[in-house]
Length: 239
Image (cartoon, rainbow, N blue to C red; front, side, top):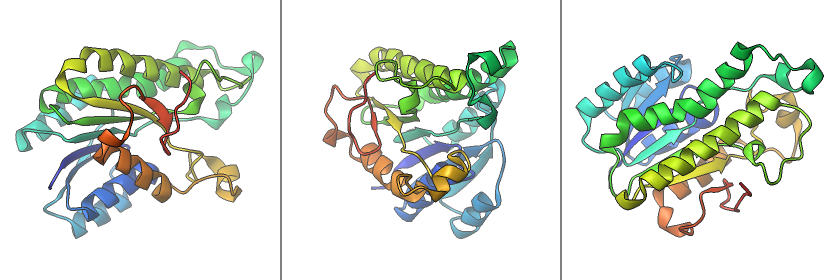
């Protein structure tokens, strides 16, 4: 059965893998990113009828609304919304004394990682119906109950905020049969994972992570009803 899928952060890494695999499964895909990459252009050439490539900065409500209107003009239903876009800055991997406490440094991280996914959900809400799935790429870094870090204030706080926002939205949508999952994608061998991840045997490729994440999105019935925050392998995480 053909599905309509929206993917943010579609230009590279995990998001691009989800786009490619969804196209290979025959789905119609709306690929959203603030930069139109060579990877997206290549996929558009291969799948001209299945793929729409949309430039959008999810930190801008005007951008998100414009993107949402385009998508809604082309489909009456969205089966899966993958909120994958996010930012991480290695310079923030420091303790409190060295953390930039200017509001812009914190708010940019929060704006993209926590509020951005909610903007997408708001813009597309009337196309999400019974059986639709929302996948938010969160992180174990957003867990309060199992927090072990002594650094990375802005990133960890932004993911904790994403978790709370998604939980509130889940409560709001409980009567509409829409599942929401906040997933830790693993330590990814991508630019965001960094050079250390690229060399580590413990890190996972975006292709492998994408495969697991898509299984959850396409078969939500395999996940216990009370499980929302978890690893890409479906192992539960502590809020």
